[in-house]
Image 1 (tube, rainbow, N blue to C red):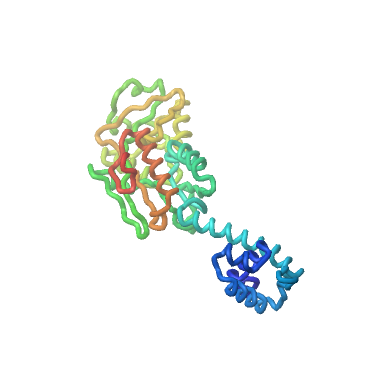
Image 2: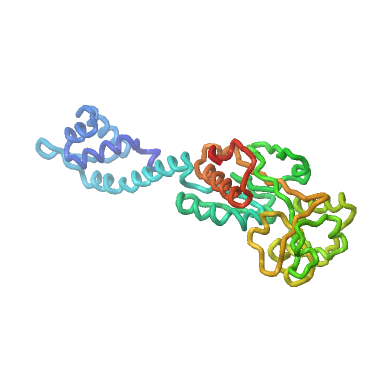
Length: 321
């Protein structure tokens, strides 16, 4: 109601008159003519229905109403100034919320360092972090999504990404699966096993979502001529590997999951066929000019280089990646 009644420009001029103590002083400070300042003050008095200044000798002084209006309006202008700063920050990505979705093993291996760095460099940005496996289907689209592509994407040499409307989608890296076995396993000292050799062993399931990771492994097993004998169902790679360490069975996990192996287990490469998964990255179009989003992507590629030594060439990646 206040801003609809009063012209903020006229109010600013009135505040300058009060601060300078004269119409001439305000005119000089603002670069206006004294007559223009007088016209704005007269207009403000009509808008408010208040007498805001009175003449004393050859000068003017604010009335009690004028003094109160000038003092109280400082709160409004402070708020408007903060809004201007907020709008500028939002325009340049320095404030607001950035929504980032990722799968579990990326969360464990890559995200802690990324999020810690963003927190230091952009302290005014709130990060809304979402685990894809537990995502609410009704939630809005993320600004950045690090995800596992469909199993078909890992079959050929050239990774494929599924286009999604409103996003820039690129391949990130393709990685092999490894078998994790206990130190006492007959495979523990092997450099490599064929997938078919694992057909009669007890397997430990490790995918709570039963998504593309599990589907890719099952397809590879089908190609090798068997269905895994799952003895235990766990919900994540770390728990599954601890069951392996306890001697319950073996588990097959992607390379990203074995960055930090628990004690008592070994990894062995798999051949004929080698299960693989394709990791990919999506950036929402609304985040194209967001420097926080771009910084997250830059840091992500640094993490991929740390864990895998390489990443797929991408227009979203930093030029020196």
